[in-house]
Image (cartoon, rainbow, N blue to C red):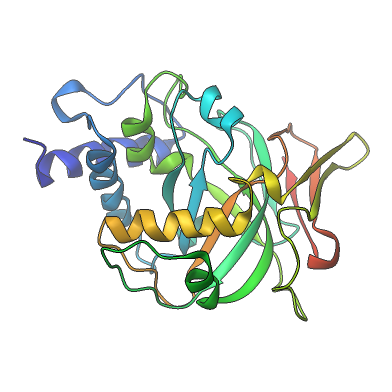
Length: 261
């Protein structure tokens, strides 16, 4: 039986590695989650270490290539912690980073969604959106080989959540724009350009948002007013190193940037 004490013990182990910038091979077998639901049970205790309200949610593995890379068969939800937010243009240390990537994303700020048994349709979910923002995620893992541990342990490890940058809310009307076709560019200043679009995110960022609302609803979790959802990278994850400055350019939807040291 995978009980609350096992979930809490596994979470404390992962959070300790997160705080210390260290890693482990895998969660010990005695407290290791075996299913996605057990992984989410472990993940829920990440909030035990945070004094602030939950900032929001992320979606990992929103492309087939990303799913194949980490050997999972579908997307995963993770929690965004308020203390992990980085201001626009701020500096991020790579000293303990395992992944060393930046991801350019659409972010939605939501009103309340009540969990229910029946799946939500896209129109219902979009009606609950208060604002659209550009975002950069800087994910990371607490495992030595995050491609080898499987979905349950990755979910337990907060779906590789770590740092993130949220840009200003989009001004004007954006709801009639086809987000799937909207171009997204990641720029490493003086080095490289990375082109993508909203279609990289489960085919459309709105579909990704619908997915996480239904995923959380199935777990009995309601999104709270003001919480943010970053929906997955629109470009291939950008490899970064100290000295790089990365800008996410979403065209008419704004720009967001971060520096690495």
